[in-house]
Length: 119
Image (cartoon, rainbow, N blue to C red; front, top):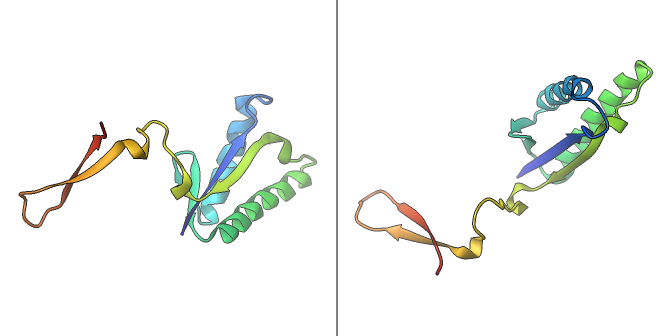
C-alpha cells in the first residue's frame, strides 16, 4: 500500500535562505528512511501507521540534532501530514463523473481507451 507524506515549511514566517537548507536536510533524511520524492510528496510502500511512524522518527531525529545545537526544528514546519494517494482528487482534471472510458476496437492484442467528457 502506498502512502504519501507532505512536509510544508513556514515560508510565510521565515526567509527562503533559512528554510532551503532545512528542506534539503529533510529530503535527504526522508530518502535515507526509504521514502521516494514524487513532486513535493514523500511516498513509500508501507501501511499508513508504519509510514507515519517512520516519518515521525525522521523528524524527531532531526529535532534532536537541532536541540544539540541549542535550536528547535518544529517552528519551521508549517504542516506535516500523510494520506493515501487513492483519496486525492486532482482538481486540474474534470470530475470523474464527467469521464467515460470506452474501448477502441479493431487492434488485435492491444487494448486502447479514450477518455471523453460525458454530455
